[in-house]
Length: 276
Length: 308
Image 1 (tube, each protein chain N blue to C red):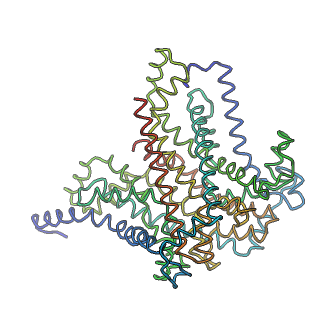
Image 2: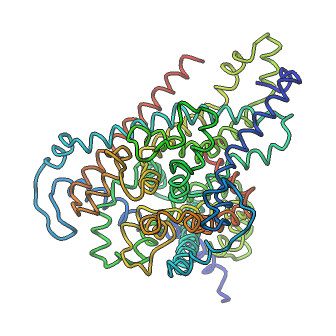
Image 3: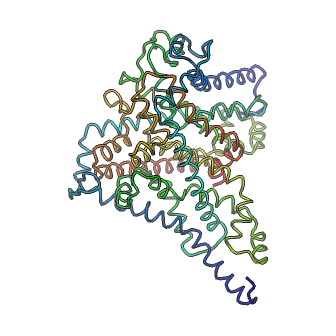
């Protein structure tokens, strides 16, 4: 595969094929949007959009469930808190690994790699037991504290911080900056792109997580969007429009964040894989 | 704030030495308490029969014995393996193919196309599952409405994707393909961009055709990323849970056709409340993933030895 072997016909065919495949991939998303705009009578008459646009599904979503707005706020709160906590601790550890020599650094790196290989489900039962003993079951702390530091994030920040010249940090030291000030005033501002990437990756991780919140959260008032939707498909499994409205609203915050941070995101996603 | 210079530099050196320990301590503490300790604990717990977090009875290896004899566990392992197989052998080649087409410089609107392929991944598995649960509805569902005109015999309009045990796995694989193919494509695209274009030029001068160029230039060039994608995709597919569970309306589907290892773990550990058995399942899963990852690394390593 190279730029010059393709004939004109081959090029046109490739272009058409890619557009067709992209259209197929986008079709379910278009259908999803369409389904949220159809009244219950139109839902089955029209495959995609109906001539009349209805907001009934959105009204139903908030009125029938009565809790969807809470679920939305819960998810927003939990995801943003987790992002902030993970961002702080992961970048701090990444900074230490990138710019300091200390005892046990090698061992620490090996440990981190090992945790990336171990599926989290291995520790779910004992972790649940531990959190139960600590009184953290059925609270957001039971979700936030065990996941306060992202190993993936540490690697991400270690790599981007390694690129910062040592002279810059040394100069700051001579100017009288403490090590934490160096982190706060030099390392973090320079790491802006990686912060963007990590925020999105971390936000998506928390926003979309289902299994662990399903285990830890029992009180309906604490439910996040994925759990709320899983309850809704049991209760309203015939009301497609309303379910799709719930799904669309659940996806929008991630889409917005993605549009804002797109460039950083792709760079961050592939940074470890391509260079490491 | 003003201190004598010597004292100041001494305190500076000390805090420079202490700083890294301080900076890694949050990670170290949470790792030891919520990572390492539970791993040891799960080994111990897997030897106990439990009922919720409180009652524990030592039973030796009988949890593992139970798993070996349990037909549901065998189903869960089989389903997970089938899913992993299609993730690796269907999804990854397609992702690579897409990436190779998209990496051609003369393709128009590459950025838009790339985003279109990637966009399903912005939806989490749980949300994709809710969407596809409805897309697969007989008669009215989009999947049947789209496939029926193309393959009228093979896909009748009332095809019951999620009610027919034989169709549940294809339905899961298809939804997963939709969700992840663009995600893996992003990795392959980045890898392809890092391949030195002059190597293609050189290969062409030497008379290599497209296939030879692929074998001699593309494969070695993208190999580190390809191995990374292969291993992470396999690990990820072993953790399948949300997609079938929510697509099948909070169940394992007809005849447990959508039962996965993690779903089995959830049911036994957190619905029935046997944390000991859940730990044994967790260990089986972890060991399975470990063996398979090492096997993959080994295989791809051997392959490298052959090629060079």
